[in-house]
Image 1 (tube, rainbow, N blue to C red):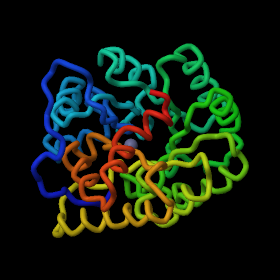
Image 2: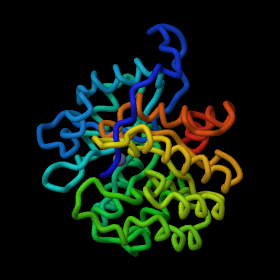
Image 3: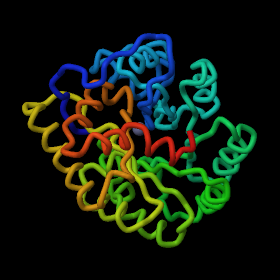
Image 4: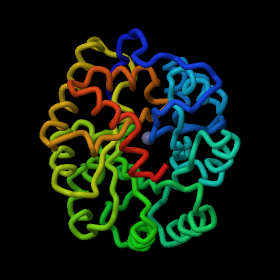
Length: 295
Ligand SMILES: [Zn+2]
């Protein structure tokens, strides 16, 4: 995972008091476990984040983020945190976090994921496929049952796209253009390309322009250290702004952090830097997610 920490700046969104209506910003892509073998713990450390449920909820509150979708982080063994543990964390969040079910490519895992979604219909907001980390591509027949179910229930499927957090990831499988064939075949399926396909921003611009049900999130784009943090953040904002112009608007772009990989302040700083209208920023920060995930 490449990227740089953005310079800390004044908060764009005023911190609100603890009482009153929930702030509207939605983080559509956060990870958490409270386990010692969580492979993302090193990012939490690097970003000086308290990687616990309390720490995440406090970060959200401080940054005026009202709701979040919680995804399974990878464990050091390479497998994702069991979905049941994601559900447990969401239950403890008092309704602030909703689960996304991670689906691995096997008939057994697909069946288990569908069962879990069936028995928690109100809670589950989407599925997630870890392209680039698992051996199967998006169009694998192993996922057919999942796509059938997701289509019939109107549940989006989120796909990791682009750069992988480990140097052994398979970029040929996480390349965003691999989703074109799936979107052609399944016009009813809502597809979300996570991380804007980083660094294949133009490819994602074309996909969100071409396909009525293909969206993207801007999570996990700034992290780590680097010599040109400010220039890098500006470059990213330029790429995303241009993609929005190409796509004809911000309707397909969704805010997310990839917590703990990117901090809330850096992720919000990226939105602040986009060269778009205030109304469009609002769509990116919460309106689009509210519609797509039916929140
Ligand atoms: Zn992620």
